[in-house]
Length: 239
Image (cartoon, rainbow, N blue to C red; front, side, top):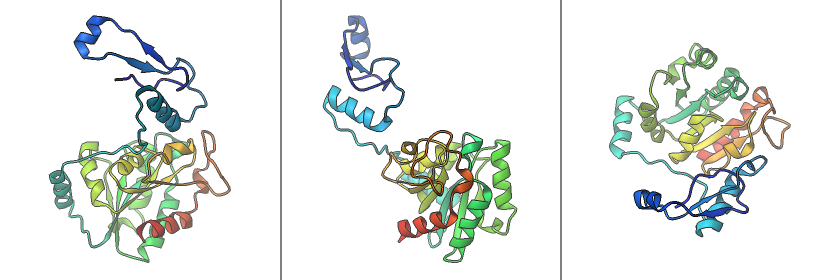
């Protein structure tokens, strides 16, 4: 067994630990990065290199979440999810103001896709005041009848809804990680965090602000996401 990924994968240590700890927990060896060397490393490749060197395992960087099939079917029934239309997750929330793409960009995408097919949009966000403003601007628009807000549902209640959808368009938020982990193709709007946060999973398809070739902290690009690019990637992913 090995401990958490603390720092850089080079020069990891094989520690000797007390016998009473080994006997109590069954842990014979603990591998760890040197402390205080995390800055500027690539978090996914560093972790893969560490596990390969320490335990000889080449670990895939695509985490998966699994739900009970009966819970997914129950969510489909409870929310009257019609699989003959396109059900879309819109992860409009985010942990900070600089990561939340404006409602106008989501609405522009919705306008484009509704001209193509009948859709239902599940609006996933919390009850933060600024997040609710984005949600309210969407559900008070001409797209209200196509929207199902989920701000008052728990994560446990929301999770089985996700596999009933065909695709997700999310800010870099918890919902982008959850939907990708549940195997849903997820377009991630990367505007103010390192690109790896929205590309480490094979189900993630990042979109960057116009004019940018990379993103990181302080890119501040939430107003420069092109809804046409979202729409084009949506069409490509759904065929």
